[in-house]
Amino acid sequence: MKKKSILFLMVVAAVAALGYLFLFGKLFPYSPVVVGFERQETERAVVYVERGALFDRFGEIDAHIRRVEEFHTLSFRKKPRIFFFGDRTTYARRSPSQARFCTFYNGDIVVSPWAQKEASDGLISMEIYLRHELSHALIYRNAGILYAFRYPKWLLDGIAVYSAGQMGTSWYPSKEQVYGYIRNGDFMPPEFYGTGREEPVRIVARPRTPFIYSEFACIVDFLVTKYGRDKFLAYMKELLDGGNHDKVFARVFGTGFKEAIGDFRESVMRQTEGRT
Image 1: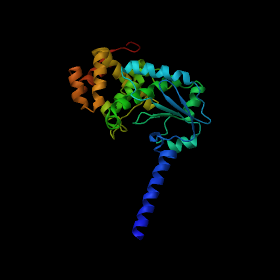
Image 2: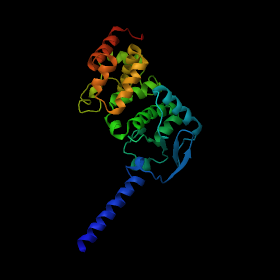
Image 3: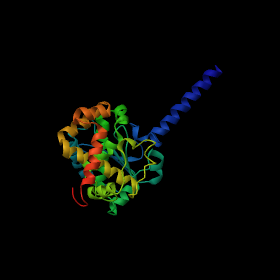
């Protein structure tokens, strides 16, 4: 009887701990119950705003989603949830990432208080950053959590930056600037990104991460320009089902991934500064 009581208490404690993580901890973005936020539902999204948040432009959300769906030629199977935090402490407690914006594998998006302040001060564009995150959310929602986790990380960010028109804004270098950095020796091999091989790669460009993101957007631009938008979209969509990246790439584009990256780098080196 005593063992049963102990087991029961352990189960209750585990359930309570899990409940706390969903409501107030790092599993918050996956919780079906939202506490501490005001809910606003638009035609295409469900938006949650915490007290102190600076966002009130709900009418623009649907337009951003429409543009993202049109670019990807995909639709959200369920309305994305977007959380605007107003307090740094609750953001630190509830968001597994401390980035300005973060999209989780279930397609939910969280926006930090400092991102809203930076947008209010004109340092970043809330529209561009939201379209970037909505690109991730759309791919995740169409892939499902398992395949979303396996989707090539470089391609996710390349598509997001390219589709949002993010190159040349805030801290992100323009296409011409990226080409200049590559000609000077900076280059992040896409297959290294998100692995243990990423950090040792020497990148002079600063900030480092925006350069890498813009580099990947340039690779996306190269593929679209050389092979056509339809083939690129076919490649993007085939990977939603968890297909082997290199095999899908070769089948769609008729060449190997490494060969295509080599062609991209050669095309950059052939061009003179300021020309595309």
